Image 1 (cartoon, rainbow, N blue to C red):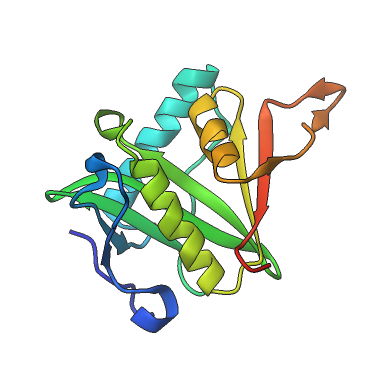
Image 2 (cartoon, rainbow, N blue to C red):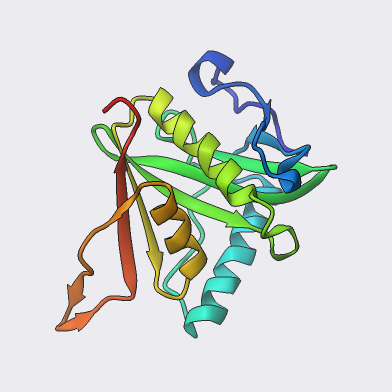
Length: 181
C-alpha cells in the first residue's frame, strides 16, 4: 500500500486522500492517494505505461522518472485505487514559474472507458492549481488518440507541431490556463 501523504506534506498543501465524486459509474469507489514516484506501485504503473508507449510507437524515448520526481515541493503524483487495486495514476511537476507539466496520466487497460482518466486528471489539475499553477501543459504523441481527445475535451489547445531536423514530431503539446486565470 502507498502512503496517504508523503513525508513533509500536509493535507492543506496538497489535499487529503480523497474519494472522487465523478459522475461516471466506473469511478465509484475511486480513491486517490499522494504517492512517491519511488513507490513500487508507482514504478509498476510507470513501467506498464512505458511498455505501452513502446508497443504503440515501435520504440520509445521514455525512461523512468527519478524517484524524487513528482514529489512536493516540485510536483505531485496521485495513484488511483479501486477495491485495493491500483487502476491508474497522474501527476504534475513545475517546469517554470506558474507552469505545471502534467506527467504519467495513465489508466490500466482493464479499467479504461469508465471515466477514470477524467477523474484522475480532475484531481491532478486541482492540485496543480492549488499549488499556484496558472498554466497546465501536457505532451503526448499522435499514437495516443485517447489522450489527445481527453485534453481537447477539457479545453486544452494544441500548439503547432514541433519540427525536428525538418521532420514533424509525433509529439503534441496541449496547454490550458487554470480556472480563474
